[in-house]
Image 1 (cartoon, rainbow, N blue to C red):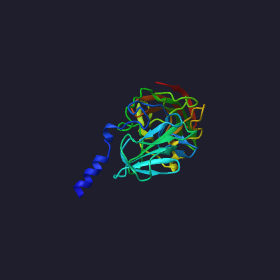
Image 2: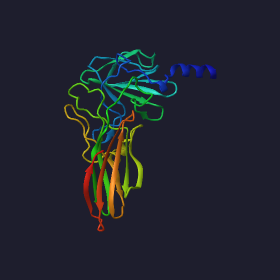
Image 3: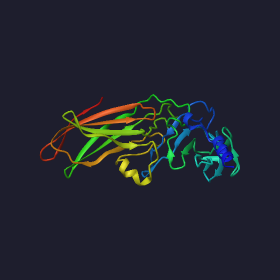
Image 4: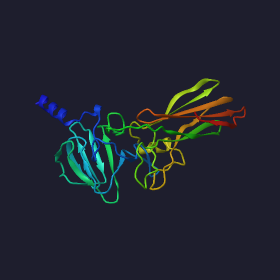
Length: 285
């Protein structure tokens, strides 16, 4: 029985290493995404999936086989391993606890939403469906935008933030045409006299989902989410405070997306003997 059960699980599980198709037709074509993984939401939460733009009433299809669980505004398709795909803002067209196979129509997008929120749970946490091994095909050649960088001093400690975002490779339909994405990785280092006094440090890692209690440690004041007709504004904490000695410093920042496209920006500043901070220049490269 153990061998049979293992075989059933293997047959039910999709080959995630090779990716899976899109939940709307055509399955083998990339679609516009207006909201990305770990985007800021409502000033206190992280977005746990991606918002795929499509007209109300569009059919939604299972990207992998599994058992259906219906909720008031969502459908989940769960595999024996605990791996689960969920489809939000969808009216179900399949019965509760029914078994569906890859490509089965499971519902339609509800009136007034204009998208399906698609999420993937790996049995432990939510993961980015746009990572390698996720939604396929997916091609992204846009380079994340980095800056401005803001450096401040308070009580002898230096703190820094950076504005950073990624543009969608396919512009979403109006009124979401200006929507931006959160980069997958934001990293920084501090250089003095050509030597890194703080090595490359990860400020933001959106490869997996962040809990709500991490919001204020990741997003700095001034952050706002995408709204219809109004692009978001994403400001990330680089450091909440480090002590530095006198001298001239370069703060270097890199932001990357799921396909390795990387934007860069540096910011030079002076720290004097009285620990007052003087910005000397803003350089982009």
